[in-house]
Image (cartoon, rainbow over all chains, first blue to last red; front, side, top):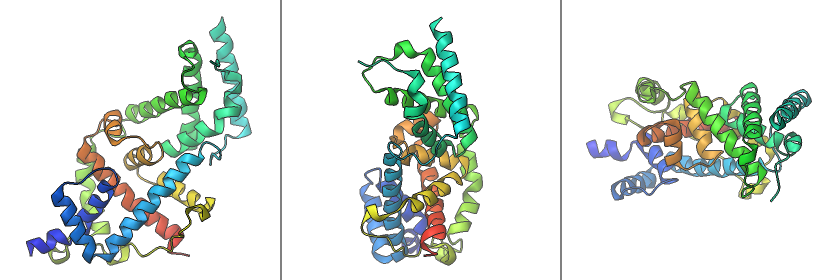
Length: 93
Length: 194
């Protein structure tokens, strides 16, 4: 029963899934997760979707460079521009 | 070596830095404030710019420090351990079974359903990205600060722990919860309704 609980604990399995994306797991953790995923389709979906989210955030992070999702409003751009030139002038004195 | 040209900063880097800041702090007003602080700090430190990195990289490094200060100043990650303890039960009960016979299983209504993920990642349009951005913004602040440091700034976990002053075990709990919530949000607002 105890073993069953350990092996079928989706909360723990999803933690291990997220951890494995960034770290090497201990042998015990790898075995647990392997066994869990063998039997749990829901966590297999979670695993796929978690990787998918990683790829998507990576794409967003990469696209900031050429296609930033948020734009400064004209008013803000103007205001910041004025602050910059004012401070630059002060800095040169 | 090129010397920095503040007059061009808004045009060349404004939207980029702004987007990075909005994604990190989840709020446009705060992002604008941080941007302003960044530019002022950069001008004051302009003689330190060595030109061995690009102007943009240099500005980003200043902005990143401002973001860390922002989270620190407001003590966003203060008492993370007790926050996690206190909210553990509601997180657990929200997503997972409590019953000893099914302890730790997904609750049926919260369990991930399959997504029709297109094989071609480039086929994903900006709309999906926008939904994900919304999902990240709506995370509780403690979770967002760590999640976006990892997945938008793509910072190493050791550095995130150091910068935000959290232990590595708290880091994993935060990342885990954030991932569960973001996944559900993306499912609910995109895949499950397609």
